[in-house]
Length: 199
Image 1 (cartoon, rainbow, N blue to C red):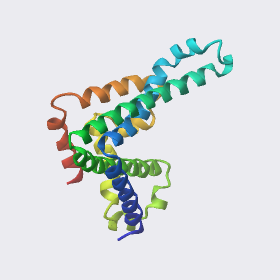
Image 2 (cartoon, rainbow, N blue to C red):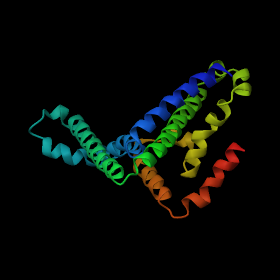
Image 3 (cartoon, rainbow, N blue to C red):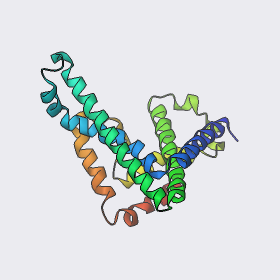
Image 4 (cartoon, helix red, strand yellow):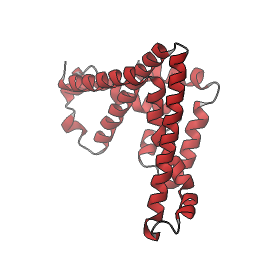
């Protein structure tokens, strides 16, 4: 077993334990809160700045408005997640919430590691950090290096495009992701991509 496998395996184990502790609802909230928070801040910080104008020094209005909308959105999402979490415990579904939470957390960890591998390769340091021996003998390197692109392909998102996306494309990209996730035939039409990627 390569050192790469030990490090990544330990990292994924920590994510698993965290997911089992928090449960799926809170794990999902932790991911969505920042994404939706930033989207809300981009959309509504201008409106918030109008209300804050006169109460905050002019040169700080924009940043204060952005941070305020971001934090409010995050808090609201976590309050909603907490309420749903308590409801699931009340109807004796806490065990299911934890099991799914552990699985989801491992997937989040795998996506993060995969993205880091690709980003490191994109900087030109990949061959130095991940030797040919590691790439060939590691158990986790091959599946992890494919995981993020395969996951994003389910949402019709090109990873290289995502890295270079500019500010004006954020709303379009977010809308594309949301539309694809909630399309009824999403799972049946897309999951075969993962099968082909890893087989």
